Amino acid sequence: MGPPGAGKGTQARFIADHFGIPAISTGDIFRANVSEGTPLGVEAKRYMDAGEYVPDEITNRMVRNRIDEPDAAHGFLLDGYPRTVAQVEELDGMINFTGHQLDAVLCLVVDKDEVVKRLLQRAQTEGRADDTEDVIRRRQEVYLEQTSPLIEVYKERGLLVEVDGLGDVDEVTKRIFDALDVVPES
Ligand code: ADP
Image (cartoon, rainbow, N blue to C red; front, top):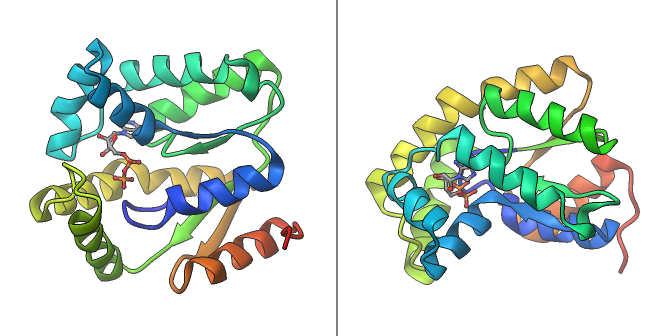
């Protein structure tokens, strides 16, 4: 977890590689569908371009299908899901059904000005459609309203691991591995 621009996607790949599990990014799956022009992509694009969340029903169905894939049978890392209280409940149901359990909920803690700065930079290099200033601002608001309450939910469950997301990518990775108590491969 963490606000847009916290570095979730970057760090997700390192963690997933370490554990030999897939990193499942709802944002990436949506973007792939958008560029392929699938019906899911067409529907999702309307929300994404405005910085709003794609409706739970669509997102939940997509995640359910993805974690049903064989490569997720022995575990997976979710990046960008769950993002709403309803998605938390849905995920509980899904993993109950597949016999998995949540090991940890990692939250990257970052300063608001810093993430906006990073996203504006990314806008110049990657040109993501939702990285314009207005949309960036809206995405931060939506995160605060709909997703930040989840931090408390997972804290109460004893699953929350908070890590400072400021600094170099390598430094943050090291902090994450330390916090998760794993030894990174060199
Ligand atoms: P970021 O966290 O940097 O905003 P993501 O790539 O994770 O970007 O997500 C991009 C967009 O995809 C979100 O703004 C939202 O519209 C949609 N999205 C991703 N995950 C979810 C989710 N779990 N629920 C609803 N919408 C989502």
